[in-house]
Amino acid sequence: MPETGFHFAQPGWFWALAILVPVAVWLWRSSVKAARGPIHRYADPHLLPHLTGTRELKATERWGRFLRWSALWTLLILALAGPRWDYEDIRLFHPGNNLLILLDISRSMQVDDVAPSRLGRARQEIQDLILQNRQVRLGLIAFASVPHVLSPVTEDTYTILNSLPALSTELARLQGSRLHQALDRAEILLDSLPEDSARALLLISDGDLDEPELTARIEKLAARGIRLHALGIGTPEGARVPAQQGGWIHDRSGQPVLSALNQTLLQDLAAAGQGIYRVADYRDDDTEEILEAAAVTRLPPEASDDRTRIWNERFYLPLLALAALLLPNFRERRRIR
Image 1 (cartoon, one colour):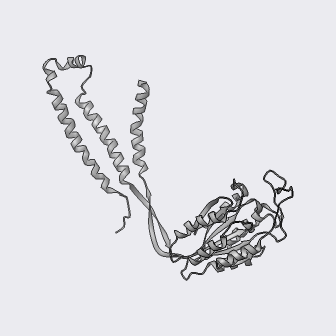
Image 2: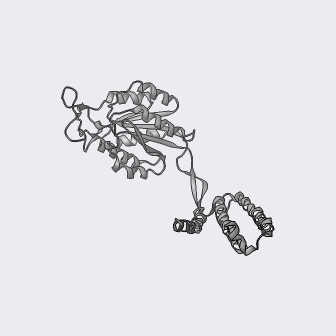
Image 3: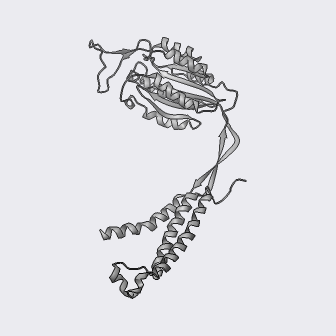
C-alpha cells in the first residue's frame, strides 16, 4: 500500500539513534571513575585544577554537552532518513515514435542563399516540426566539429522551441562538420529508449560533409532499426561563406569559398538510412512528410493510465537546523584566534 502522507524514505537510519545509549553509559561511568581516581587522595577537589592545569567539568556541563551532541546527531539521522510529504502523480508513457534531430551549425550554415540564412531556415523548419507534431517525441543535437546535446528525446518539445533562438554557429569553437561524432552521441541517446520504440534521425544540413564511410555507418544504424531522414538546406547554386569577423572566407588561392547544397550526398545518406530526403521550403509539406515517416510504430505515444508518484523531499530542513546549531561554534573559534 503506497504512502499517502508524511513518512520517511529510509526509516532504517533511525537504528543509528541507539548509539546514544552506550555513549550515555560511557559518559556516566567515566565521570564516576574520574571522581574515584588516585589523584583525589593527594588534594582536595577545589585544588585539583591548580595541580593538573585542567578543570573537571561539572555534571551539568558534561550532560549539557551530551544533550547538545545528541540533538546534532538526531538531526543528522533525520536528514538521512529522508522526511517527505506532498507528492505529484506523473503519468507514464508507452514506447512510441522518437525522432532525434541532428542540426548542422558549421560556418557554411551562415550562407544566405535562402532567406534569412541556412541556419535561420533550419530553425524555422524545427519550429514547424514542433508545432505540427502530434505523434512524435523530439530531441535535438547541434553539431559542427563537436556535438552538443541541446535536448534528449522528450515529450516536452516546447523546451526545444525555447532554445531555438540561441542556436548559432558561434556555439562551435572549432569549425567543420563531423557527422560521425554526432551519430555516436545520437546512438547513445537512442539506445536508452525502450526497445519497442520507433527510433529515427533527422539530419538538417547543407550536405557540406567530407567524412569517410558515412554511408556504411548509416547502413549499420538502419540495420539496428534506426532510420535516417535528411532535410536539405540551401540551393544548388550556393553562395559565398561569411567569415566570423566580417567579410568572406577565402581558399588558399585567395578566392571566396562557395558553398552549395550537396543534394547527391544527402540523398545517398537518406537512402542508406532507409529514410526520405526533402528540400526545405516555405510550405508545410516537407515537415509533414518527415513526421509521417517517423511515426511508424504501432504503439501510441500518448500517456497511459499508469502513474508514478514523485514525493517532495524535505531532508534539507533538519540540515538547516543542524547548521544553525553549529554556527555558534565557529564564532567561538574566531574569538579565540
